[in-house]
Amino acid sequence: MQAQQDSPNADFLSKLIAGSLMGGETIARIMGLPWIRTSIARGDKVSTGVDIAIIGTGWAARYREIEHDAKQMLSLHVPRDLCSYQFLDGRSQANSLYALTPMTVWTLKAEELLRPGVWREDFAMAVLAALATDKAISEEHLVSLGSRTALGRMAHLIAELQWRLSPSQPPQTSVIDFPLSQPRLAEYLSLSSVHVNRTLQALRRDGVIRTSSRNLTILDQPRLETIGGFNARYLVPEGGAGSASPSPERQAPSGGGFRSPTLPQ
Image (cartoon, rainbow, N blue to C red; front, side, top):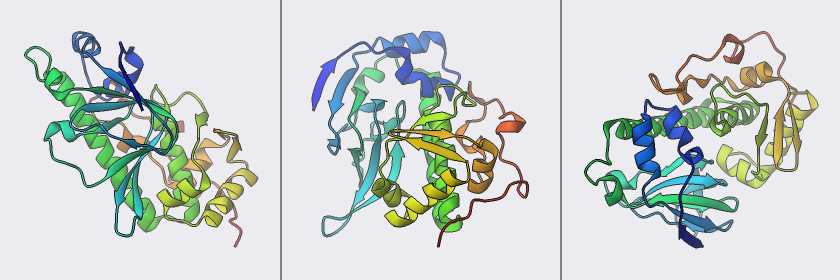
C-alpha cells in the first residue's frame, strides 16, 4: 500500500456532484483540500479509519467476517463511490472493505472537512444523497436475492452496473468495465459458480450481452432490463443534478414484450 498527497481532478467527485446540487465554489474548496491518494493491491484490506474515502480507480467489495475465517460479501463498490461513512459518526464498522482489483482510494481527514468555511450545506446534502443511494442499492440487492431468478439477478446487476459506472446519466455507452470473476459474481449473487456460468452463457447465446476479457457489451438493453426487472429510478436521487427522469427507451418495459433467454438445466 502506497500513499501520497496529491491534487485530484474533478472526476473522482463526479458521482457526488451528479447526485446533488453542489455549487462550483464548494467543489473548488473540496478539491483544494489535502487529499491523500493510496494505491492498494488486489486482495488487500482497504483501511480508511474515520477519513472520508472515495474510490478513484478499481473495484472493491465489503465483507462481513464471520466465524471460522469465513466472509460474506455485502456490497460492491466501483470508481467514484464514496466507500466509507464512518467519518459521520466515528463508530467502528462490523465489516471490512477489500480490493477486488488493483485500486486507488482518495482519503481526507474528517477534521479538514469540519474546518470553518469548508463544511457547507450543499456538500453535506451530497453526502446524504450518496448514503441514500447506497441504501437503495442494498435494498434492491435484497430484492434480487429474495425474489429474482438466477437469470434475473445477473441481468439486474449488469444493468445496475452500467448506470453506476457511467459518468453521465442516463448512460451513453453500452460497453462497461466488468472485471468480476465468476467466483466473485457467485458470492455476490448467492449462486454457485456453475450457475453463474450458465446465466452468462444464456445471456450471450440469446444476443443480450457479449463479454471479452474485462469488458462487457450490452447488445439488447430493453431485453436485459426486462429480464432483470430493472428500473433506474432508485439510482437517481430526487432533485439532484442527475435526477432527470430516464427517457422512455431507458426505462424497463412493463413486461411481456420480450422472450427471456432459455437457461440450461
